[in-house]
Amino acid sequence: MIRFIILLLLVIFYLIITIPIWIIALILRLFNKHAATMIGRGIANFGFFVAKLMAGIKLKLEDMDKVPDSAVKKVVFIGNHRSFFDIILSNLSYKGPLGFVAKKELLLVPSLNVWMYLINCRFIDRKNMKQSIKVLTDACEDVNRGFSSMMIFPEGTRNKGKEGTILKFHSAALKIAVKAGCTIVPVGISNSRSVFEAQFPALKPSTVVIRYGDPIDTSALSAEEKKNVADTVSVKVQELLDKNMGLY
View 1 (tube, rainbow, N blue to C red):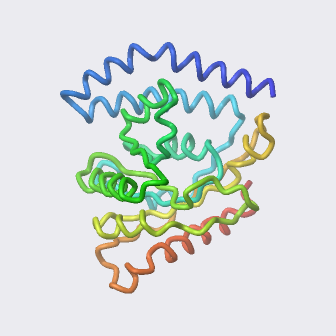
View 2 (view 1 turned 90 degrees about the vertical axis):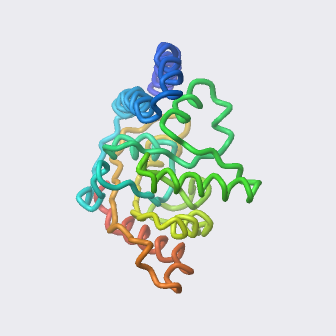
């Protein structure tokens, strides 16, 4: 509990003292979106690194060599979602610019919403299908333009079930990625829930494993494979989680 309170105070302090840098980055974004994004990423990742240390997380990255070079190709990461720390650790793991498709409620969090905007996050209204489709389409367009990779959690919410399991994937995000011709990289995140949510509000030092799967060239899929892409990627993510067993 004490560790959580200290971390929370540090996060609030960090968000406040970085306000001048956010303002500069927002102004810069009007002229150079890429530069502003890199500033936002740098600020965020330093804060994420401190949060990782404070939480006592040991991060294991598996099969990183399967991830395309961010300088050459941007991709859509599709992963399971069990914890708020999934976002922190995914961002620290990837070397290039990485945005997230997140729920619109996060727009109400002061300073955090600015950071998310700067690194090119997209905010989705889960109750508005038309808006959701547009957000997902815009996110895939960013990938194809080489602006940033995107991380999408198609379960739609954090899975509170047994470790190593996943919820049914919503197909919309996968189908839009296929329609846009984006390369998909499956991601299996294991044991992140044990850091915080499993014993809320306490923090527990834990080992978290992130394993990357083989990239999927959606432009090379058959019509039948495109139709069943959500189920296919879900199976691949489950296989990654199975491989993570025993590593945490």
